[in-house]
Image 1 (spheres, rainbow, N blue to C red):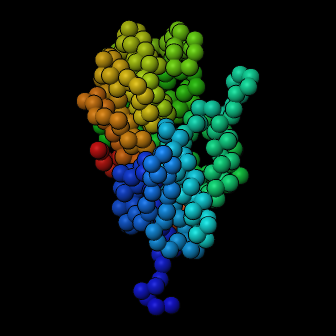
Image 2 (image 1 turned 180 degrees about the horizontal axis):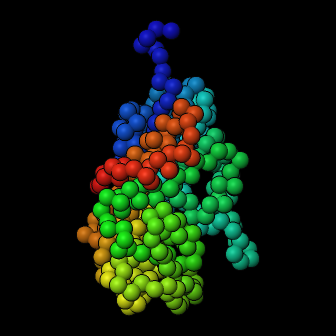
Image 3 (image 1 turned 135 degrees about the horizontal axis):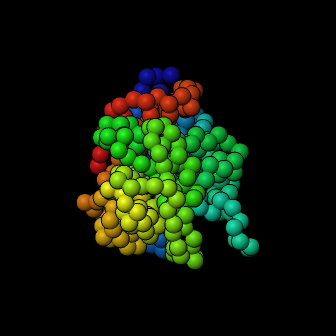
Length: 328
């Protein structure tokens, strides 16, 4: 084959929702993003298209599936296009996996939307998933293809080691569901943790909240996977301060930040909210800082492509410095 006709066996593409993060991932991986376009019809319908030959290639499609559902649809259409273009493997890199909060039937006559999304992605032709901080670990079992589940703690923990006096902090979970996450942070860094117990009257509306544990004279860090309206986070922060903590900050992986969430956070007693760039911020705030996930995803893509272990990558990441120094 003439040199000019040789294809790169690995190609990275981005959906429209995650272009900035995708460019950063591609740059760290040592490539440029592949050439793709999206034709938009007048009625809102759209048609993605790969503008280069991908036959026989490993195609990585980077797209978070936050609202609106167009982002999920675009990812599936790109996967279908790659399948019909005879790609060798189609790997969906989904920094934020949407619909993950619907992972079970918690009342009659409701869908298990996370399972539906898993089925749709596989039908579209996706052969592997790379994602970060699923709302529920069991979602991996909804897939009949490999799922590489990355953890934002591999970014947050090195950051804390570089910037904090670890002996003075205490981790907290804003609800019972996040206790495992908070305890893992505490175990890794050798600190204590507490939790808040909340009861909801309906979705996105808190009835009551109680604190379990002692936070007196401590600098508390709330950890969770998703911040949506910010109500739980702000109420937990207020409760922790009222219970004697010196300060409260939060580390959240996915900044959904719906409606007036940013205004709510700015008016809260929280000193700082640290998030990642799995979802682009709707607007900037002095209280919100963004930590890049690009180094983690670039390394994961490299390991998948070269058939290397991802399991040991987490342990290497949390034990070293310098991996989490890039901010937006």
